[in-house]
Amino acid sequence: MNALIYLHKRILINGFKRLIRKPAFVLMLIAAIAYFVLLTAGYKSFFNKIGITNASEFVVLIMVIQLYLGVPGLIQYFKRKGLLFRKADVQFVFQAPIHPKEILLFSGLRSILVSSIFMIVFCIFGCILYPASTLQFLLYVVVYLGFDFFIEMSLIVLCYGNETIPNKYIRYISYLLYIVLAALAVGFILLVIDHGYSMAIVVEYLKSPFIKMVPIFGWSIGLLQWIFYGYDWSNVLGTVLFILSAILLPFLAYKSKCEGEYYEEAEKFSDEYEQAIENAKAGEVSIVGAKPKKYMHASIKYKGYNAKAIFYRQFLEYKKNRFFIFSFRTFLFLLAGVALHFLSRKDNVMHDLMNVRLFVIPIIVTYYITFFGVIRSKWMKELQNYYTFLLPDTKIHKTWNATKIEHIRAFIDTMILALIGGAVLGLTPLQILLTGLVGVSVNASRIYINMMVQTIISPAIGDFKLFAQFIDLFLMLVSTGASVFVALVSMIVFNNLEAAFLGMILTSGVMACFAFLLSSIAFEKMEAME
Image 1: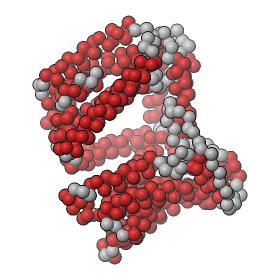
Image 2: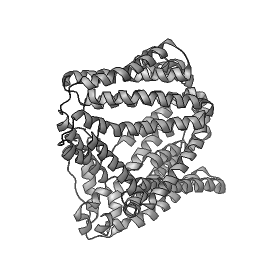
Image 3: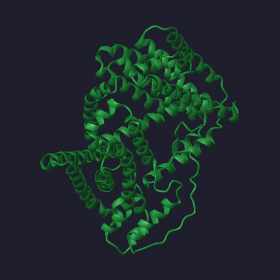
Image 4: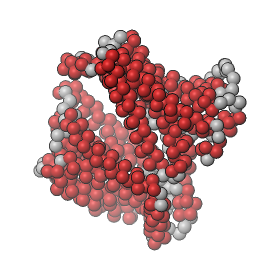
């Protein structure tokens, strides 16, 4: 026990010392505080627009998080994939004369610490937005985190260290939990279809005694509702069961059998995690614990010379994928187009949309790409291939061919949304085409700004990647802001709606070209990414 305490204490101290030695840490801390302040100021009006006007409605977010993040987390513990063991843990801690339960507890402590910090920040957020409910937030965070600590640590030992329940029954338990979550989601959708959406409907649905009878997580919702909504028999019962769980589960965890059978699977998960990190650095999407990706048989006819080989090799890789060049972004844009189609049936919504119909789709595309479109694509993988630097071609051609297919994907994804949504909003063919080009230009700016940060700024910062991510987002916000400003000025000066599209396309294009030229040096010198 003392060895584990010393180990984790030194990890924290040494990690903090490494951070404070870097000037970037202070800058990141200032940026994080400023971002939190701006976030708080901006989200007050955002919450009001979606119907969250007081603390009683704000805590709905906590309930949803507890259900739809807590239950899958428990399932991961059952599968022995919910805890992260580092290579050092596998090679040294597992071999040390330390009880397997103690190793689990200290590893789980890291996960619980992160989730506790998230909950504390969330409650601070609530106190700032709704100061009248500060005492309720403080009471909840103290009581909940106090009891939840013992429950979480016990569940880690009972589930992750399980050596008595057969895997067959664990699968049944997992399926049952997923069915419960799906039933809750379906029930809510049916309720919204019958009565329409409003925050009052959401609150009343979550007050259902059935939800508060879901073991552990439903009981914790009972505690939350007793504090914020007042007395109700289901709230009291859920709270009592939650407190009893915090008392009984540690006793069961202490008595349970755990002799280290999880070591092998923990080591396997550690290897999968390390591989996923390497794949992410190479620009590939990798899910820890996922089954090996299946590729289809495909062929391609190469055309052109030199750096064009990069483009055709990427195209061949996409042809081997089951969904070709389509991705999760394609699905989201398709879903957004279908949502616009259904919203058009409501006269009040359609009346508001028609006032800004030309800008609805560009706003959706720009918002998604700016905040959620950080995709390294396959350009990072090209930098790891030695032949890329041996190709007798310029760095400009290499950079262009390494990212060309991403522009094609962006155009197709945006056009899917533009064609479906444009038909509903009554856009002309020219406006639909310009919308597709907006998606390409904004996505190009996103790609090349990210490339510039990864190849120039990130190596200068070193291990402090979080600050590089802040810089990346800041530069993209500057690019997006400049594009929107030019679009508005163009529309006013030329008194033409299409001029706004052209202004945005040209501005994003200029920003993308600037970042493109700066980052292309990475395709000239192999040492740039070392």
